[in-house]
Image (tube, rainbow, N blue to C red; front, side):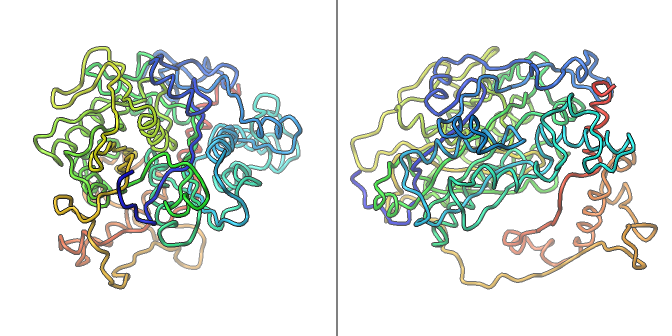
Amino acid sequence: MGDSVSDDEIVVVGMGLAVPGANGPEEFWHLLRDREPQFSEPGARMDIDTLWSADPAAPDKTYTRTSGFIHDFAPHPRLRAELDSGDWDCPELSGRWLRHSVLQALDGVRHGPELRAFAAVGMTADGGHAAEHGLLRRGARLLSGGSGDGDGDPLAGLYPGGGPDTDATAPYRVVRRALAGVVEPVETVVVDTACSSSLYSFDFGMRALREGRADLAVCGGTYAVNAQTMVLFSKLDGLSTGGRVRSLDSGADGVLFSDGAAVVALKTYARACADGDPVLGFLRGFGGSSDGRGKAVYAPNPAGQRIALERAWAAAGVRAEEIDWVVAHATGTAAGDRAEIEALCAAAPGKRWTLTSNKSLIGHTGWAAGAVNVIHALLALRYEAIPGQLLDAGPVSDAVDVPRRTVVWRAGTESGCRRVAAVSAMGFGGTNAHLVVSDRPRVRRDPHVPEAPEAKAEPVVVVATTAVEPRGGGVELGGGFEPPAPLEVRLPPTVLARLDRSQLVALRCALDLRDEAWSKDAELLRGTGVFVGHSGQVWQALVCTLRAYLDDVG
């Protein structure tokens, strides 16, 4: 390569995926080059007629019939054999796609008991398609006089994807089942930062490798479209009405969610060389951030996104002008795409960015989207080309280039001439992630390239805590709990009335932290994190699912 490569550089040694229209990276590459959108109705998986209404204002209905559904899944040969023999199964489709992707990512990569594996997988705490069906079947058993634990199952025929054991569809169970017998991680982390989850998984994996806690990191995410997502985002007017996703397009009218799983296998450069593994690309640096206070949970904040960009570039030791191309988050919502462009332009004034998005072809794969974008970038490195973007009305902004045709992207002959891509995933609610990917390692001792700041040897301390606990020895948060007032949180009373109790409790805790010193000092604020504990689905989300299926059950 012409460079002196540090042993602790993080490299990609394998990748696998399943998305609408593609059962692996090679098929995904052909899809990116052919640019044929993969949107359809769900078929037998859900009765769209009972979930859909042409009236966008219809309660508990979705106004779109299409999304990105995987219809022609061709499992990895080992998974195919396991399914045929009954040796492996998982109630969640997303677990099946995840195992397929893990097997693909580890094909030709040295792994096994002699190597310590770490796994980080993005998956929604709300569960997937089978979790919805399990909830419905459990509710029906309770309503019909059963205990809900197996006696009587009146909806078994209607919802075969859901079983009596609702714990089987919990994220940790699905992830561990998908990994079983392939890799046995010393540590498994399930990440839920919404749409940036799988890109955050790379941060966990890179840290585990650099800190010597693992020899192999398996990172990615998985997601299956369900009725809850289709209905909830319809109520936010966030879904496309035209059955397409127009990412980075001035005609963008909303997002469509999609099935998908994507996994990337990582090692340090020294370990990859020792194991004889292929090097598909270098992960140069990761940056994450939260939006902070904004207009609304669904309104992206460019200022928050800019922090993630700048952190990633500093960690990677690159300047903005060295980045050739960005695989954008670009969900096809006008506000979201413009905010992403605004953040890039603010972080690098004067630079004309080249952006594309695969969501115009396969839709938004949710918790897997960041890892799908990384594989998109790695394939472009392999084939020395940036696939063109599908556009209808033209670019959403004149400040960026969105190529409509394939752009040749060849490696330079000089040691300092690298191909550098950046990958973005911006989560709902403002959990932002950005990753720099390159065909070569960072340049060492180059005075013109900013180095990531050295970590300060300072202790991590707790500066404040807050909690809401039951009063009077009871288990309910009864009369002693005072929910936030509208003026305190700047939310209309109608919105507060519809918030879940757990969200109101979290708001109360946050308000109690406002008077702490760290919240008023800009320097302290930059080095302070806020951690929130939460478990499982929120009650309002469960109720929404039940309401959405009422016509189907009837």
